[in-house]
Length: 409
Image (cartoon, rainbow, N blue to C red):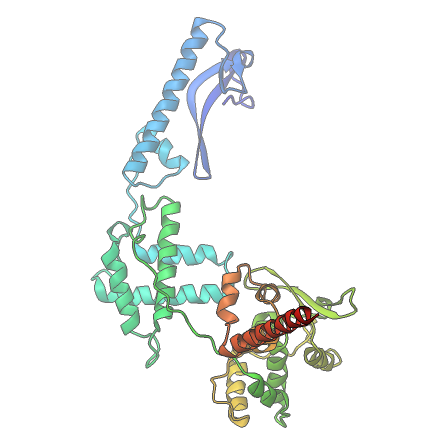
């Protein structure tokens, strides 16, 4: 490139080389100069008008070739790849080889992803990082390991450690919980490969083996027991209202806490709809309000407790919500372990699927981007199979009767 902002004696301008690598850039002088009229700005080289300028272009091509060679050498040696590193190699400054380690990678990943991932996801990554620190401290005298030493045996040993060394006493990781830690570890290493801190993924051969989890939900009688109960305790009554509202809308805890009056719209069918976006996935959610949910909504829209940020429902932490639900289940005589997320399962099964709502419609209302995700929440239960087969039998009986009548006629 020609630096036209730095004129030299004789009307010439200095020529610089610009290096761009992995979104980094640097420039340095080639100690050569040329007249502006002799420079082709589009091609970044001299106009070959005479032998001297053609020889100058050969020199520029030689510089370009040398820079490319130093870039390839840095790749082979697994040294940091940046514009400055290529320049240093070209001018003869030796770069110290950076040793990337597992703990460095975990810290770097989590620091970078704070601006990308949701708080809940980051909390899980921090837990995986904590497991890694404990594992590495026990396994290596230095308490860390270079990324180049990672292999299949490493992740297998980490798998065994997570399963048998719970962070919380008497609360060991389940198989699926362990697999989530393995999944996050693999994502970190894959991220390192994409950043060219590793030439290949040494953990690529490890297979994640999740066990299909049977999600729980409330049946009609259990839902009715909570829905029909009024609590003198103010906190229990609020939690009961929010839980039942979620059972009839499918909203998750975070989406319910963020629900605002402007998210409630009246459709062309004169039915009120919730139209919002899932905090977890940014997928649009459109749910028509059933009568039970609308009655609860009216109660809180008319309340003086609406928060300054205009959220409809009073803030209750997820922990407090689940503690209160434990009390509610005991009072209502429900044997299942109640959590707020169970309301979402109940909406997907008892309220919608069991009443003939197509799985594709349920998927849209839950804000899922894939139908396969909905299948985890909305199981085809024995009762639903019986209902569907009963409808089929009625249809077959009707067809048989019509055929008989036609035969008689």
